[in-house]
Length: 312
Image (cartoon, rainbow, N blue to C red; front, side, top):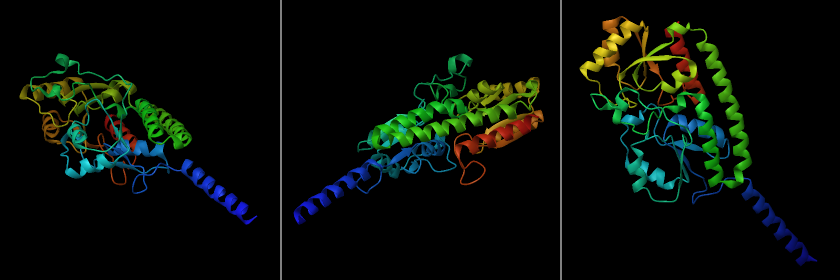
């Protein structure tokens, strides 16, 4: 009787361990599934899908422009130790290509933008006199600035998490559905805010080609970009600066918009010549440590309010 009891006890323990394994994320050597993203806004989006099951880490720290980032040896180690690496794609993370070549280990790489059709620069087939247009030959990578496109990001991230952690499939599906609902609410809120700006004043002058998807979705006209490139690290010729000044004057655009991490020198120069204001605290490439852009949805709301207030 004692042997039978012991056998039943062992079976129950093994069953409990099996069920526990099904209910938690797979374990690496130190007991954690590692999910890594290239940027902070991707980390927040992915964390909403992962929920409490997995902790997501961003390769880039807060406040860093991916266009200007210089990779370090520790980045290679982080990639090597990751189970899942999530990047934007569309050649946005050019710094990461060499890291992937040098990183060992087994990890799945997911491009969040997979399945989306990129915008291309219209002028001269993407080439300018300064050669700036050649930075992103795959097209405009800034798809996250339209929350409707982020729905595809969420679906791709969900599928990647399920692939590395099948036991969490139902959790990831439920979290993804809930976050997609929040993104749809965000889109409706943006439409409501933008509707407070007269149609003839929905004019955007930007530092680089970042707000194209946002403009297309919400009915703005991009009058001009100072740096005719998808990269904030591009340069502008004297002719392009003069063209920007003329575009601002002829359009009546009231403001120039740029991201907080961008150099505002050219924007300030053009503003002095045209009398327009410079809004230089948009968060386009990175979240912030706390307010006003601690999460992706917060980032979008902050940007929308700054744009709407400047154009009213």
